[in-house]
Length: 392
Image (cartoon, rainbow, N blue to C red; front, side, top):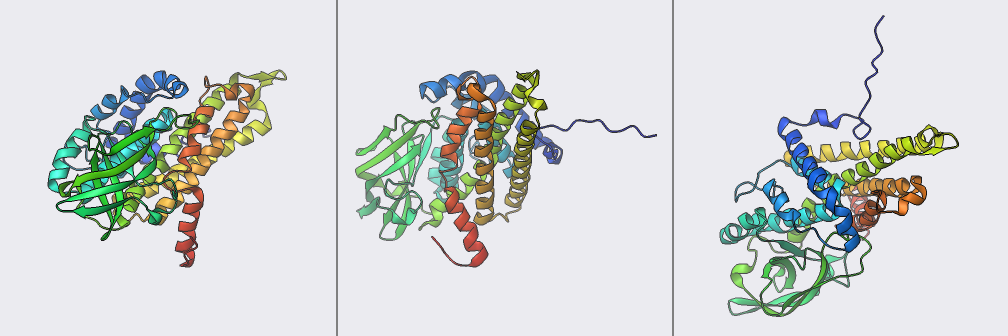
C-alpha cells in the first residue's frame, strides 16, 4: 500500500513558483532575501518610526547590482525581467520605501536615460547610478493632476541653445536625495524629458513632512524657477507622453511583484502569531474563522504570484503590453492591501504596534495602491482594452 505524501506546502508559495525559476533567478532572490534579513529588517522599523530613509542601505543595494539591474552594459547587471521582479518582491518584504527607492532609480530614471538618452548622457549617468554614487528622481506628477499627465503645467521654452524650465512637481520619491531629476515638461514640440541637476540655479526640492505612509522614504516637491537647462541635457530619443508613460509601465511591472513581498511578510507574521496566541484554551489557528482568513490570504498571494510570473515571461519575450501590467498592478496591490489590513485585524490590539509588520505594510500600501496609477485608472485601462471606448 502506497504511503500517503505528507509533504507540507510552503504557505508563502503554495504553487511552488520557486520551482519555475532558473538557477540565476533563484540566486538573485536568495541574495536579496539575505540582504533584507541581515541589513534591512534590523533598521527599517526605526527608520519608519523616525520618518528617515536608511541611506546606508544604498551602497548595500548597489553592490548587489540591484540598481538598473535590467540594463545591459554601463556597469549594470543585465538581468532578466523575472530577476527584477524578484528583487522588488524581496525588497518590499522589507519595506515599500526601499523598494520605491530602487524602482525610481531603476525604472523611472535609469530606464529613460538608457532608452531615450544620448550616448554622452548614458555614459555620464548610468554607471554612477548603478554604483549608487548618483541618485535620481522622476518628475511627472503635478499638484493639479496626478492621474492626468496631459494636464501638465510645467513647461520649457527654447532660449538659444538652452531651455528655460518653469513649473513644479509633487510627490517625488528621492527628490531631496537626488543628484539629478528626469523632469517631463511641455514644450512647443510636445512633452520632452530634461535631466535637471540639483545645483542648477532656480531648481529647489522641498521634502514633504508629516506622512503616515512610506515614512522610510524621501518624498518631495520640486520647483523650477527659470531653470536654464542646456540642450545636451534634453533626452533626444522621445517626444510626447509616450516617454513618461513607458517609464511608468516599467515601474508598475516591478510594483506588481513588490507588493507580493509585503503580503508574504504579513501572512508570515499572522501564521506565527495564531499558532502562539492562546484564546479560550486553544491556539487562535484552530479557529475556523481564522483558518478561512489565512487561506484567503494564501489564495490571493498565489494568484498574484502567477500573474506576475506570467507577466515577467511576457516581458522577457518582448510581448508585454501596458494593459497586462495594469491587470497585475491592480490585482496585486488590492490583494496586498487587503491582506495587510486583515492581518492587522487578526493581531487584535497588537496589530497597531510597529513591533508587528502588518500595520507598517498596511500604511505603506496606501501609497503603493495610489502611485503609478490609482486602482481606478488601471480598471479603466482594462475597460478601454475590452470595449475600445475611452472612459477617462
